[in-house]
Length: 385
Image (cartoon, rainbow, N blue to C red; front, side, top):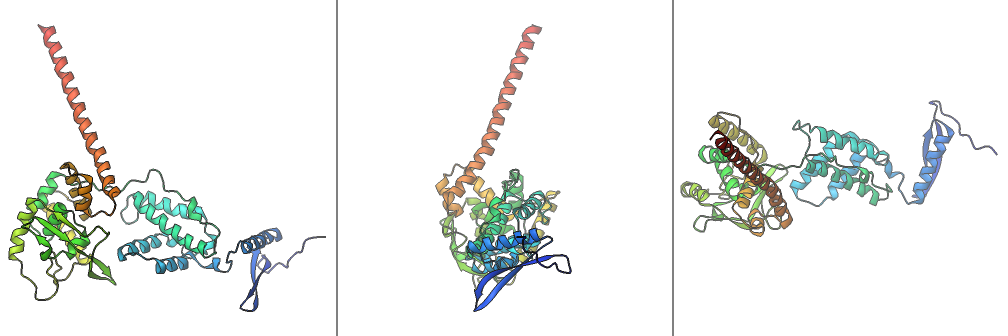
């Protein structure tokens, strides 16, 4: 008996209907199309196999963008982390309108590769952490769809991060830049000095009040931080991690810098008594900080007579490096930096070990080279004699 041949449509495609069952008391069908009867039958077979696995074949037509929005709504995390999630979704915009059930691993891999080669924002290859954030966001979105029986597997499982993706490591500032920060007046100098010599995070700095600065006991108490809510900087208790609440013991040079500021500042009649407020007296926001930081770098560049560029986070990394070079143990450094996990601090120390031990070996090589020069010089003198 010959196989059933469906009627070809005017556009040349052959339709095949698949019965899905009773939904709300009505018989539901899904139609698939193929250029040949064999192709249409194969698509129909895939639908039937998916139904046997319990896959919701109607929902798989929902786009990746729709599932991404569902994921964001269900995501329980800080506003800062939520911002990173949304930014990752934006990077995946090229697959946003594609039905999630039709996206292949190669399409996601291409996006990862594009950002690995060049990040449009920086013009440089994306760091490994950026690529990991991107892949993790995609993986969690597909995982949500899989748990809701829209997919029977997660295509991101087959996506890899390029092995040559650079690690996002901020180098510590050299002594000449540190001296420039300490000697160049600017409204942002106070922020730079505190981040450089206390290692506070930017959000912690924006929420720091004078009542938490104890110059007699040479320490700063971190008890709160600033986060953006609906575009407005808001002070909240605690910080980025459970260990963000901490006491940071500060060096004399920061005490000497802060003392005249503490004595001369005027306590506001209303609102928090912030160490580094915005011009309106409240906590600093992202946009105003961006403008101020740009102005600060321009002032430093003018003072140095050459272009100067570094990020605020590099100041915190410089503080961590100073702790390492001073011989501060990992546990104490963890407390000072407010890391939730000792592994985070250990990772920094391990990286610095490699950097500075390699420099130490360079010194040993120079020493050996100088000794060989002495030996050759002595032999030459003996031969002349």
